[in-house]
Amino acid sequence: MKVIALHQEEKDIIAQAAENNRHAQQKIYAKHAPKMLSICRQYVKDVQQAEDIMITAFMKVFTNLKAFEHKGSFEGWIRRIMVNECISFIRVQKKVRFLEDEFFVEDTFNNIESHFSVEDIQTLIDGLPDGYKMVFNLYAIEGFKHQEIAKMLGINEGTSKSQLSHARKMLKEGINRLKNYENGTE
Amino acid sequence: MEPNKIENEFRDKLEQRRIQPSEMAWDRLDAMLSVTENKKPKKKRTWMYVAAAFLVFLLAGVLFLNQEKQGNGVENNNSVVTTKEQPQPATETVQLQNVVPVIIQEAVAAKEQVRGTVKKKSVQPVSKMHEVPAMNTEAVAANDKKEIQNVVPQATADNLLASAMTNETPKKRSTVKVDPNALLSNVEGELNENYRSKAFQGVVKSFNTVKVAVSNRNYE
Image (cartoon, rainbow over all chains, first blue to last red; front, side, top):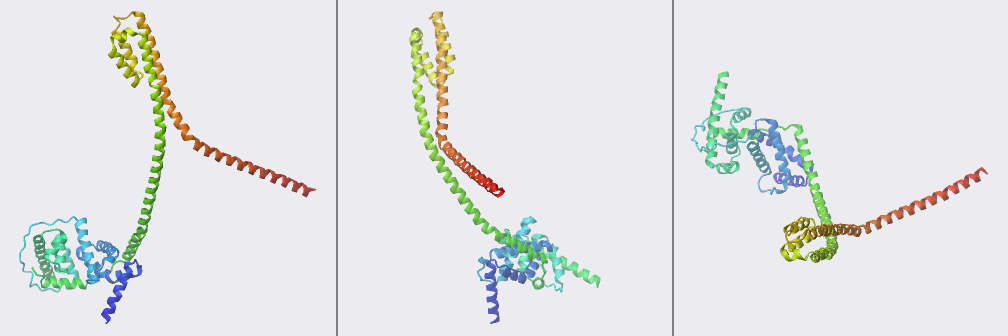
């Protein structure tokens, strides 16, 4: 019963925010902003830049609120807008070009056990080039399929796969370096 | 290529993470939202302005077309006038024919050329008429030549005058035709102003006399 009541409350707030009720908009922002900024930060190293992207994405959320059909979760909808904004930022601002090499190998990434902190994970991801980073985030974190990623980034499916394998290779190297560093200090 | 253990760990940890945005972030978003909200009604207004401007232009265009139609009528009258005056140079050439029959008999083609040029432009014939007698010097006596040369410039001068008159008259007529309404309205405005000032002066005068009378009475 509680869940239904909460859902109804969210629906009401969304309806109010769609009518430019600033209080309702602020409620939505306050609820979702910290997580959305975390998502933007995955794609962009600079927190200030990530915040700028988040703000423009929230602008799109509020101006297109009437288009939200309550089919999926509201958070998922906002998240999708954030991710799209990050991708377009990286593609437009940084002019990322993908190497269409379509070369990928099954890696031995699978059996590594680690207990890294989120900061460590973020520094590992930050170390990737933008193209690798986008594909890795979209595939491993957002859970998109290669076909979807290829469509989103305007590349071939094979390129998406090769970008992921490159990203994994680089991450593995990074993890090993980090482990060695931790062992060295211990 | 399935997401593996470490990637799941990455995802779980990143999902848990929250980054608190700066306090300025909401203010910026608020400002951006109010800017877009203010823009929307403005757009509607500009649409209205565009529509109004379009209507104004349409009205102006219709009025202008109507005026042009009236103006066309006047111009047609002018063209009639010019056609009436055009025969005059032709009669002058006929006079020339009477004066010098020998030349015309010898050079009919030349005369026709002259006629054409006289009708078109009044300056060109002068040179051409000079050429025609020069061609026929062998056949005609020297006295006749002089006469021709004397007569021809006069004729061309008349043509020039006539064409000048025809060019000037339509302008004068058009201005006279346009003016009356404006003039009338101006005069009416002036009349009103005169009347007002006169009435006002009269009121002031009577007021002054009353004032003087009252002050005199007070003195007394």
